[in-house]
Image 1 (tube, rainbow, N blue to C red):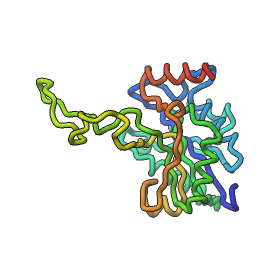
Image 2: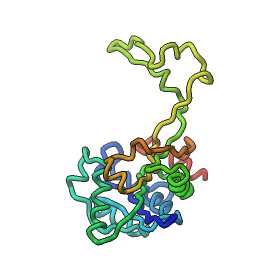
Image 3: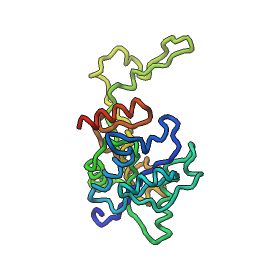
Image 4: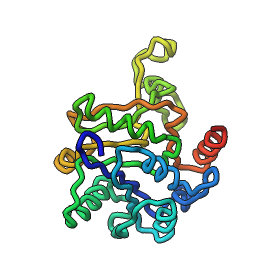
Length: 232
């Protein structure tokens, strides 16, 4: 709890993964991938419940082993490739609401971001109050400006750059851009239910370093994350 608000951390982890099979329980630096997010949530003093939403008995078993709650199995319709995160979150909130268990704030932690830490989660929650925001999304600075991006024709001929004249400028003179890194999402539950998204007019950013912003989607991402974890 923080400033009188009840906070639930939700870790979504479906069994199917085409890019990297069984990635959520693939062992990273001695632990199943999902265990890192569970540990970070448990270590954050503001969080009241740490819940894993999954359709996989294997993931559910691993989550319970690392002290997360798995009070339900996710319906198959919410575990399909096209299932939306917002529907997974609302399903979990509705499950608890039916038991008269109401939460003021939800924190979404994707298991594919194992390099965030409990401090990132705490600071994102604190930012909700200092900025008087309804939602906070973690971001990191883009190392390469998107203005240097260019379209290619079928025969690989260079097309127009996204930033007109950007190709003639050095990196230091270009505007700084940030990308959503997928590590931490925080929102007022009423705002999330009304908005059906973390994005909105009252959403602010929490900046993280690129090193803690690895989002695992491939074997290469996994190896980079493992290297950084072992280095720590």
